[in-house]
Image (tube, rainbow, N blue to C red; front, side, top):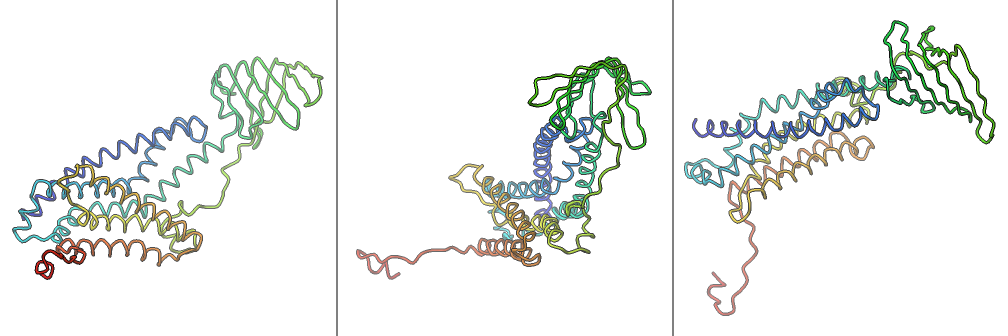
Length: 371
């Protein structure tokens, strides 16, 4: 049918262009955030690209939803502006008839959003968390890069090496260590050093160096020289097994263990799917053009609607977590209420209903007032 094919073709072009723009903006923000976390030592600088991929994949449901909403409102608004809507209305196509071609175009995108929200979202969170834990679980010496000062995980030591010879014994030259422990400050320098592993302990062996110690509140200094000096630097223990956060759990696990934390996360994932469906109906209800206004006025309303809906989704998730509202009541109140409001507004526009105040009486023309 010409009516449906023409709408789907324009929707495809608009959706593709909007999706590319939004992905570019989001990935730029993710890149800046990833570089900031890498500079602060939260993630490995070599894993920045992989971290960006996981983060972008986790944000893809929201990007697809906004792209779909903007593309639909933009297409329908363009049809209003170019008077194509008048032609379709004259041919007997009501406003509610546009729902069918829109859903026929949107159902693959809605299916992808559902799969990403319910299955891919927890997987990307788990991968990102594992990446951070692997980087944070390294020993202090594994974090050192030649030519850079590096603080230990406990914050009481600072390491520096001039050059790493990359030998089999992990030898380094010109080693500097400054520490502050139990009220004692010390500065240790050595011409060379190497790392040896004894069981689960890592020992730093320094050769041909000097150590200066001082005690807080005392003016005396203790200076000693050594040929070989050993210091325990940390353990090569495996990752600590902490509690599994709700956002890291699969959807099946959330359903099997319906506590408040799991239900709040489940409400968020299902909310991404329900909101995407509601945005299709909202696009038909909100699409209109004011001839006296600019083209950007309608898009401002679209973005405001999207932001408010997502903020309500996040707010409802926190309410479910603290027990202010139940899981089922939240889904019914938010998504069901918005769907009913969108359908009512669409029916009002489709039936051309207007809300007019009662006419005032005209004392100069009583017959006109009575009419």
